Length: 524
Image (cartoon, rainbow, N blue to C red; front, side, top):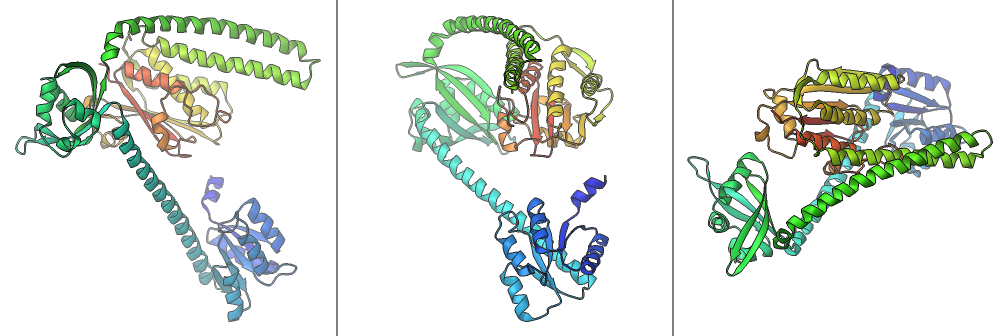
């Protein structure tokens, strides 16, 4: 607890060649809950700031060998220390001395003898200014970044719309004022491809109503299906047959909720339809081939690993360091390759058999996994908060795989902490927090009405929230491989298992602020 408190204190470096001055100032600041460091000359102060920059420096002007002005100039010329606020302290009260203090980079000037209230007030003022300056710089940086992203997004959107080979359409619902029912749609965005499919120009569609009439010409049931997308948030993906004049097409039609409307993508799949059966056969052959390759590779790698182990034993006594290092590389590579193959095999087999849901105690399962990890790494200072007696319906074997991956993920990314904190709990559908947390996911809350949210939270390094779309992508790692081992397939397996239970999984995090994974099991 003492270390954490010290981390929260503002760090002040006092530079003065007189021990009495150091003692007096140090006592004043310590009593005001500052963390104080002391330096008796300029060279010591410069070294101290470069090793660990303080939040503020109190710098005496008159010192032997190197005066305060010279020290200040050196600090201001170094990128590491240039932004540290420096308050000069001196018995000199001449205006020219004060002017020079500001000219070399000082932010304030305190005249001896000291007045406690004045010293503290001037220090706190500069710390507040420095804190606000940093916040402003961060806000400016974030705003510039957001503006750049917005500019790029607009350019990309325009480019995509005009160059896409697929039809793209965004529509907004028009509702009956009395009943609130959707009676039509207004076109917001349309690209040339879809305008041509409708036999229209872009100018004839953008901002106009009457989309219902056009949709009904394609399929009589399509309008009602699109309404369901808007009202439920559940995406629509279907293949449609469409005839325009003498031409006949098959289109893959995708509609996704967008505000009080939806975004529609239409792709010509006529050629695909003609070869669909053949592709199914090829996919089946590929799946069989993939399993065979994984099986054979595992055997070969096991042989390599076994041979490497024997060779390592043989050269352990007489082998060179270089030979030992090469053997270690071989064995580690084998282990990592086996982990990848195991992940691929797990992912490919998830659809092989139907799930067998039963009610079971999820709290107990998580406790067992954590106890197992703790027994293997007893030095880890583990603190857990596990809500008791949470029972779920699911395939226990598959849920065990998913939960084990999530907990091992939390375990891995908290390994550099003094404490590993892992929490598990349930957010009831009736709680206000349920609404707040489910909004973080990219789906409609309507389809999970009356379902509780489960979460696993850690205090690890977290991840950049801007990369959240890549979180469940197979083999995609959000952190450097050299820092954290893993195959990048674990979260993909977790997501697939949750989806097999008709559920969803999502996460929230900030860098160095831990991560929380939320999931819902939709199976009855």
